[in-house]
Length: 330
Image (tube, rainbow, N blue to C red; front, side, top):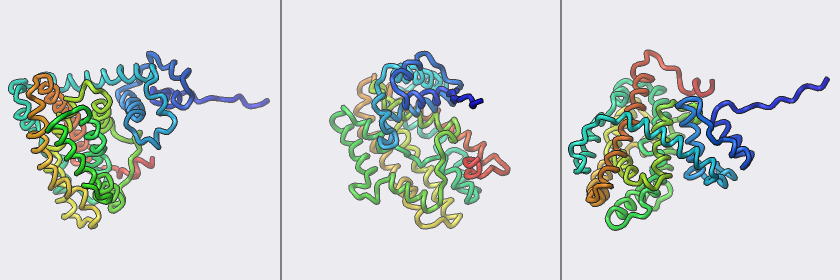
């Protein structure tokens, strides 16, 4: 008797979507009304959807033609609504006094948990292996920031557009290929033999943080929120990078480890001030922009809090954490 042919049936929504993107329109239509298994499945599915809009074009490949398929668009809207509802619940009850002064409120939000506890562990106590594993999950202070800034400045005018353009030019190494920030991060990864963590192996808290960037970059109506979220990143990155550089000094890191974090330690405080003064201040003259800017900063702050609490538990509070390389391989 011939063996019965078997077909693996995708069980998670992200698997169903990836299968449908390979198969075509009929399979995509079948996604109507499909629900994710859990929060993690929701976030992984959104990552695949966002890839169609802002992912590496060579990695996305032919699937990019389904970017605006009605089933994909409906799925995107539904899942993003759930994520933003979750973030809204996290910031519910945050004081709204002073939201009419978006610059002052942004400064106040940035001061909250400016240097999360896990960075104190990084600076003072992390072993070399623990530090490398943490940095692999942290992804640098601005993973994908260059593309986010490029999208954020679309349609702006005057000083806000010029400020975001200056910021983007710095991200691009001011025209020097080997100084582009993403290239500096690649150099860092090689210098310290940092593991490349597959998306499926990332903790859910990391997926939430990266999914927020995808949501903001692919919804024009959330452009004010994007200005606020990216501005908060610039305001907070410098002191956090300072802790990483301290760890490099303490652990005798190789020279190639330094440029990426030194650049952000030194430059991001200036970027944060300029973003406030030249982008947020003029845009926030419009109350609709002011409210959105503050909301976006609070969303980013909430997502950060979840991620860094997870990192503290995973690393700083762990008596002995399983090496990330072994965890990924398993």
